[in-house]
Structures are given as structure tokens and as C-alpha cells.
Image 1 (cartoon, rainbow, N blue to C red):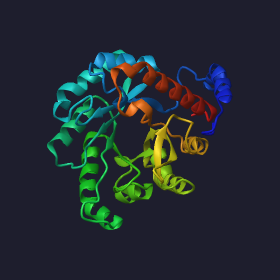
Image 2: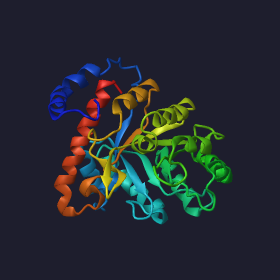
Image 3: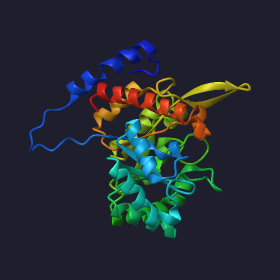
Length: 316
């Protein structure tokens, strides 16, 4: 399950997948509730050229996903100003295809923005309980703790709004030069609020970019110890040298530097049961054209098959 699986190992595991799935399937009596388990979702951004909700749902199901992480943001599958009209339509299309909207990705930052309440109210009415909150800019401050202190009031108001509608907001950790690049910054931002309403949408690739040896591990444990990790964004990356400069670049799952063996062990240890949003930000996925669809879908199927094998190995 290491990122350096050989092709032969992958094919061997793939052949054993049905056996693994059967062996790991728990025996439950009719009156025993099924244990909570993660829902593997497709980040709908990666089918952005499909605008029709029925077709989006059909394609997502054909690829083998259980649900979707639907973009509810400018340029997304649902525009914020049309959320009350279009999110229910998307919900019904996905439901007809046997799928669920396990989470939505938004640009929500300010709880006082009129579209914020519209998005949360509509999502709540449909039973959608998790959303990805947008990141934060440094603005005039370069002191992390000072900037976090400036934002605490806004975070508190958002947590109260989440409580009102019964939603959890996951703050995404992006690598780079904005607030929240390292997981401890996300923790500091949300630590004063009830973990039931706000926490982390943990991206292990971005966390590894910023702390490749121990930093991503300690960051995950810090958030997980406070029950903040309720959503995941999943992708892989590798450092590459470009014009005498090292840059991180995303790649196919299992071909990069993320320590998925350790990461999935951590998820098992905390009984993670939230949505896993799969991201594909490599190759032609960054600038997709309809003519590239066969190649893009093949990438998605391959990465999804590998993810399911990894989950089976740790019985997640």
C-alpha cells in the first residue's frame, strides 16, 4: 500500500479485491445497525464540463463512486445565487442514481454574507451535513496568531450558524502562502469552537507538502485528538525540479510521496467515517476538454480502484 507499489503488486491486489471485500464484510443480524463507514466521493470539479445534473449523476455512478462532493461556488455545478433553486435539483438527480451529496465545497467565509445563510439553510433542508469552508488570506498581517485572533469573531459567528442548521464546516489546509497552510493553523483557528460544528477538511497531500516527515503527522494528531477531522480531501504529489527550482506537483494516486500506509492506519485508529473527497489535479485534469473524457475517466477509475484496495487492507 506504499506509494511505490509496483504495477505487478497493484494487479495482484486488484485480482484479490473481491476476496478482500467478502472477507472484510461484517456479519450483522437484521437488528444490528451497520457500522458507520466513510463515503468515497468524487469532487464534482473534475466533471466540470458536464452541466446537466442527470448526466453528472449518471457518470459519477458509472465511475463507481458512492456520492459526490458537489461544488456550490462561483463557476461550480451550483451557483451560490441559485442555490435554493439548483441544489435541490442536483440532489434529486444524484438520489435517482443511487448517490448522495456527502459534502459540498463552498467559498463561504463570512457568516454575514446573505448567500451564506441561503447555502446552509438549503443544504440542511436536504440532509447535507458537511461543507468545505473557504480558506483565509493573510491580508495586512503576516503574524499567524495575530491574523487568527482577527478572524476568531467571524469563526464564532459561523459556528453558531452551523449549529442553527446542524452543519459541520471543514476548513481546508492548502499548502502555500495563505493562512492554514499547516494544520496547526487550522487548529488554532477553530479550537475555541464546538468540534461538532467546525473543524478540518484534512488534505494529506497539502499537509505532506508543508511537513513531509513529521509535520503532517503531528498536525493530523492535533486535529484528530480534538475530533476535528470529519472530512478528507485525497490526492498525491511529488516534488519535481523545474528551472533550477523544486516545486510540488500533483500526480496519480500511489505514484507520489504521500505516506498512505501510515495515513490510513491513522484513519482506522480514529474510526474515521466521514466523506473522502477524491481530487484529480494532474495531467489533463487541470484543463479538461470534452475530447479528453476517455483518458480522464480512466485515470479516475484507476485511482478509485487503488483507494478501495487500501481501504480494504485496513478494513476501513
